[in-house]
Image 1 (cartoon, rainbow, N blue to C red):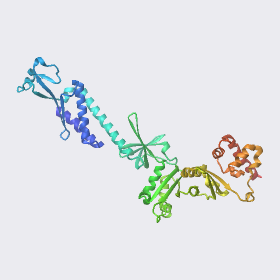
Image 2: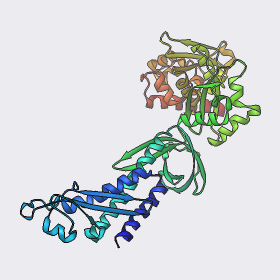
Image 3: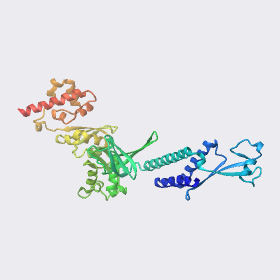
Image 4: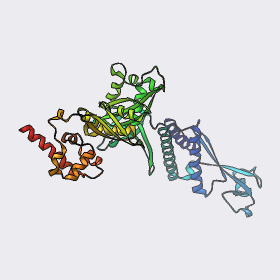
Length: 423
């Protein structure tokens, strides 16, 4: 019975440990700790006991080692045994000999055996969590390929080699559509523990994901010939990647784009048709700002002494390109260059813009202070104002024009042009 129970316990947990990748020495240590815990619970101490494990054969032997003492000197039954009782068990024993008596698992009772099973299972789960935590902590920033097995309202659960990964809503590209069974690529973004629970967060919106895709698709980037200096994204809409070549024979932008755009297109498809601007990096801040605002053509750049603020002048027809839909282009260019960029349109001859209106003509509606502020931020005409969003007007005016006032200005100008068109 003893051997049957011990084999069942050891073999079952040895098999689980192998499946979970737990080392043999670690398993032995866990088993010994569990059995010593059973001994301490029953006897109060485990000092007078030896636990011998043989996981290959599934054997366990627990020995209770006591010193043989005269019956009238017996003071501690855990560490000592009287001569009379000892000789009943082994007639050859003499005073002060060591007596090793085997104890069996069933001696601890059924409840203790069940507790031992539960403790073993819990310890193995904890070690498995530790191993998973270490493995994925080392893989932060790496691309993984997993299978979606559950789509929930706020996140998506992904199976990666038997481990559950979480793709939260904020790390999802808003254009993505997820279905159970689909394969998904993302980077390991964060590994954390909260109240003993392990969470592995993956991301498709991180700029690191874009960088890893470049490394996967472009050998020159992977080999270090081309270096990615900085990457900025508005996931699903647009991204900008500044690159530089460390080999004068290799064109950084050309290598990234590939023949007929084949390399960059594979990345674009992975990111739900996110537009990617590959920009050659330069230490010349003014030139870098010009390049960062592509596809707009920049006429000139005025940079402050600290190199943190820039006034960029572009042709009137290029303003919308420079700012981008919803301001995305100018925001990304500012992040890429680490410089606050304001775009102004350059007009040499106002006669060329007969359909435009001088902003001063709206002084009655907007007030002189607002007109003066609009002149200061480069909005000399009505169309110059319409080229900016409400948020951009508020930002450029440093609060002199609040959001409500900005909305009124934009709406008034729009109504004026609509009336002109109607007439």
